[in-house]
Length: 353
Image (cartoon, rainbow, N blue to C red; front, side):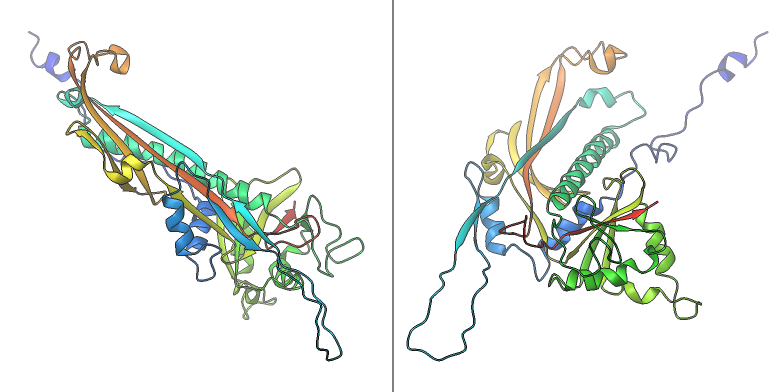
């Protein structure tokens, strides 16, 4: 007599969603992207609201920002009826945009007999793309900041025979013995190039260890190192990498040194519509915190090959929804008319291992 044996051998499954997979699409720390986003809205931002609005409408055109070069002038010592006039020199900085796009399909009938339901699947699909998009934008922000690092340091702490020695690939070299007070010295080094705080610091994730240790060594300790951090706002990113023999890497700059803005396709801005099953719209998306254009289309299709065809043989003529997100993004840094001979606001440092 079989009794209940046959029914006891069935698989046991809990209801979805569960927390068992909560780390599968875990987010990273996108410190560089956060920095440029915050800098854009800083009171000392390098872009004005007018520039941001023009950027939104610039698709199909070239966006240029006018600038005036700084110059060295002469102060006289006598009064005269005439002067040797010095005219300003202007330039146009062309803004470069990069297009980013991603999307996926949804098959509503596929969830009819599935533990995973439509909204759960939609959310996870969107999150995995936004996670990748955030890392991509973070990398682009790191690249822009690294490209803007100052090639010239006017500090008396830097150079052959000086406290921190010669720069290596435009980065100040910090030994283990020096790292406890580097951010105290850095304010002086940047001030010698006339860049005053407060400052943003973008660091490799390993820099958290140094900052965490010395930012908590206050007056009650034998050595007070906490005092030096008041002028800095630290952000970290796994996209800031360390070279060989380097423990931590950082980029320091006055707040308002970087900026970002994006633009979308005209159909999304206009809310163009073919019919109720095909249209464009603007959507504010989380994680990257951008307004993006979305193209939506609903149609009948052969969806029997979804998931390799497993369990989908009945979907040879069923509804398919397509969602396509896209936007153009620009990341810029403060203008420097001659980066070879003039100090820039971004100062790179490397703490040696």
